[in-house]
Length: 175
Image 1 (cartoon, one colour):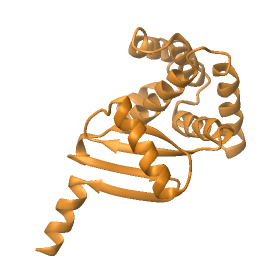
Image 2 (image 1 turned 120 degrees about the horizontal axis):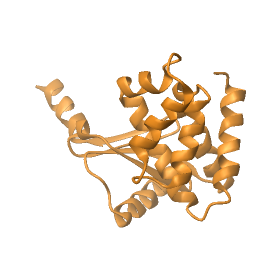
Image 3 (image 1 turned 90 degrees about the horizontal axis):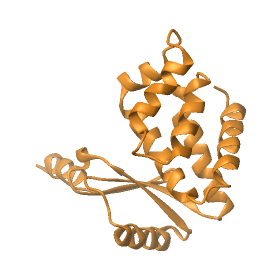
Image 4 (image 1 turned 180 degrees about the vertical axis):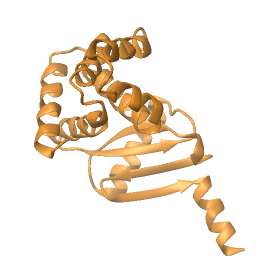
């Protein structure tokens, strides 16, 4: 899909979630759903299958997310999937996150961690990344067991890799 269409979808999603009391939660859930889709080829193929009726694809979304996500999240993912845009969902959500961050004059840090981070840890990490980059930083955490420990943070084109995996690779290279 072209950038203009992705941007249009992102703006439409932003308009819908702007009226919600659970704005930040819906944004976080959409971000997590997008990361799951990126990492699960089978699920992506199912949701993007042009031979499957849109209503059936939407039902798959309800079955997967129902009860585990805000109704707004389920409905928005279902809308995008029902419109044959499942493959574009990660790009649409990334554009949405970028729009929301820009409206708050913030940068988004995508942080990969082997374990989930507490709210306090996320706040401290945002402050540390803000100090390191000189920007107001919003942290989006992705649990990624391959990190093995530590964190990998990406803010735009800047990557800060403090993972155990990276340190082990450096040690192997040194030996």
